[in-house]
Length: 106
Image: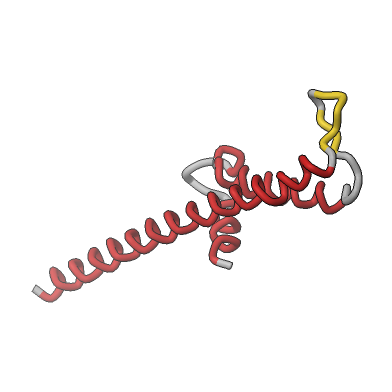
């Protein structure tokens, strides 16, 4: 759930970069696209632009069992890093606010 929130926040207008410049938004979008293609093409060969030989059952199974979980694991790790950076930022903001209050009382 936190990952979905972070993706939504990242996809919103940002002063830091455009969404298409965020590699992890691209990875999230890629994951969803592959999942949709595999779902819609269930039990059908998966054509590739570079080869006359489509992916068959064995290749599709490898995608489902190896590639998609690897992408999910990567995105989960990115989410962990994002959460840590967010917590560090919130702590810094809190410290600054406390320091400002302390100076105002002095």
